[in-house]
Length: 366
Image 1 (cartoon, helix red, strand yellow):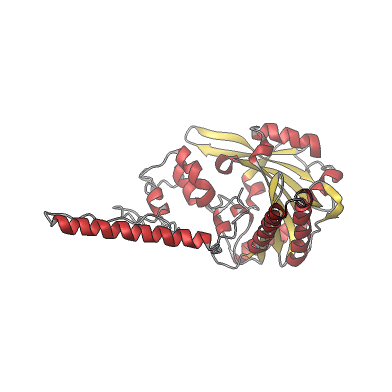
Image 2 (image 1 turned 60 degrees about the vertical axis):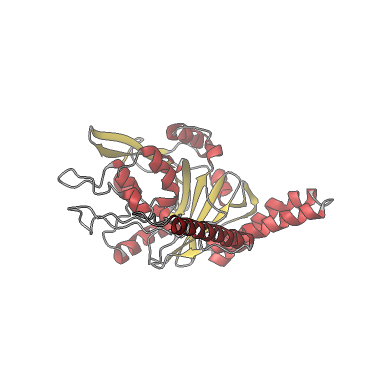
């Protein structure tokens, strides 16, 4: 079964894994913009990126090397500050004020719950926009906060903060192309180095803008990267260059030769094509929804199943064949209807009961 690019786009936010790791940006790209070192970004604007309260470094900044609990404490301060005006405005309405405080507590709980160490377990982050930004079993971890114009992902290496990944909200992008948005970022941070990559296509090689790059003082680096093809957003990545090098070295030792692949994206773009021209991911949607389809000649090693939680999928109702009794058919239909109704009531009860989800991204999605 083949899928269209439009349908793939609708699935990508929940079913995409990274195409390539963060360390692969420079390796896969050819230098542009005149070559040489990346120009220096405005230190004042970079400090705003590190600010605990958006755009206000005087309120405190996140510093490289901070422990996860220190970042959580600073994030809590920022979240509480975000709700101060709303709580104060609702002081004449105790009910509304309590609802706002409950909303505040839910957001704080979501931030705390988002903290994840990548120790080999599969998580929601493996199939998210930050898929390329980490590898398993390399002493890496992430913490997430939702802010006014972006979602901020804090990355840790050996329990020390070393990178912030800022995914802009779609409203902040305003429908601009990557090149147009890059020019607006240059107006803020200063002239950037443009880095290009060569994409091989059926029609030949396409020379494409990969990312913008700045140096940010003290060995820091700043990049603007394009994640619009499947996520519809652009992202700023600010990181400690020396620690990033150490992370890259660790990855090479722990996961030698590993390249993160996007099973869905490669199925859509036709990159998973064997020598005979047969697309080995023809059945990718069947595998996404948990339906196993055996194809003649398919190599199980190349057609790795995509595992998803099928607990919420509708259950198929077996149809009777032959000339059975009308009463039996009616009874079976009633039982099926009763079972379906009971199932819905249970699901509704769970929602009303406030059962917590195991998804670390609850409340923090783009």
